[in-house]
Amino acid sequence: MSTVRTVIVCSPDDQLLDWFSASEILEDLHLPSGSPDTMFPVRRRRIIGWFTRWSARHLIGATRRCGAVVQAAGGRRSRLDATTAIKAANAAALTRWNMWQLVVRGTAPARPWAEMLTHAEQTARAAKRGRSGKPVTVDVAQLRRRFEAQPRVLAIMAYNTHPRAQVVLDLDELDAYQAGQTTYAALHWRRAAFGDMVVTCGRRLIEPRSASLADRLRFYAEAGSYLDSLPKHHQVMAVRLH
Image 1 (cartoon, rainbow, N blue to C red):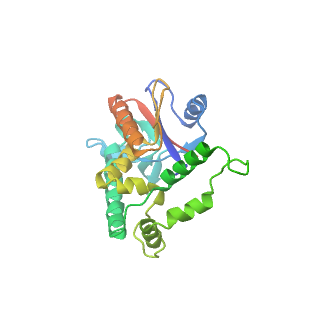
Image 2 (image 1 turned 90 degrees about the horizontal axis):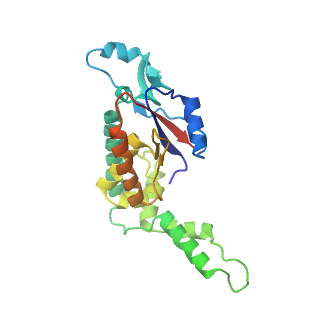
Image 3 (image 1 turned 120 degrees about the vertical axis):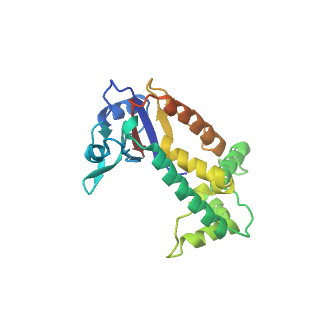
């Protein structure tokens, strides 16, 4: 999994929400500092669409293209177009999964790297100490070679090195690819709307209990339910943590 995570900070409309106030909230929750993540497309209203096209009012960290406001790190929910973000992420995920299916056709399912590493660490802890009396450690380099020796992993690596590869197939997402098209797409379109963590208006942190697919799906269900319940005039801001 990537070490870069995006947290969605929520706030009522009567409280100031900007980069500085969001940083203070994250600090109170003992989260690392980050930078605004302009992940939200900006909504165009039908009646006053021409005005909102150029206006950055009620937006945070807005970016422009040819003078028009196109993306923002946050702002009032009524000005952010989550539907467009979801559709784009879903389409991109389906493209990657379909390409992955073609690339690995004929290969056996592979053990994901995180699963192999966790199993090796648990085995080392269970052994406690080797015959020499020294602590048992995991040979990560050797374990990585075993992971990369799997035919399915080699097929992905071969595709990624092709100069005309249409997409990049992330080996850290192997478990999600193997879970099927629906699961893989759901993880990505939900992340485009809900990030990796959510800070509620009451300063409660919603996050997955672990990096497993099941815990991430449970998180997205809880985060989605909470964000959908927020009034449209409430504010949200996306912050990318490192």
